[in-house]
Image (cartoon, rainbow, N blue to C red):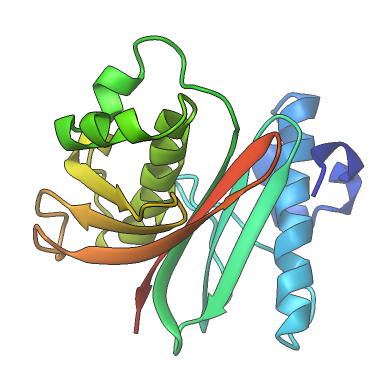
Length: 198
């Protein structure tokens, strides 16, 4: 969803209170992802309801659902599932362009940097995008904050299907815990979805 189409005035009171002090662009991003989330709830037969933010800034979904929200400067993304189907799910959306100089060295593992030799330059951003989605998916279960270099991402040969693996213990999740995932690649942006099955 284009962020420019969102209307912050449509936010519910608890959401408006959370974002009241933010700048207008941030309010529009916040509104865009919640508009998408309510549309997904509607598809599950749920009445419109708030998606407030936790102190960690993670969204709080209604009981019985797991979900994730992401936005960039111009595009928003939301994903949701019933808890009986998935234990957790994370998503991220990023521009289809290489990471800023110096960032890859902080977030990519040596094995990931080596694998990137076989892919276009912007694939470092795709790995980063997958790590962000994986972080969200694991955080829903662990409450932990592992560094991005402590999450390993492996793509298939086409850069579409992926596997995310914790390289450290994260709360109750032991080192080696794995999450499945997939990527969606558009002309100017990329999105990743990472989940752990029930």
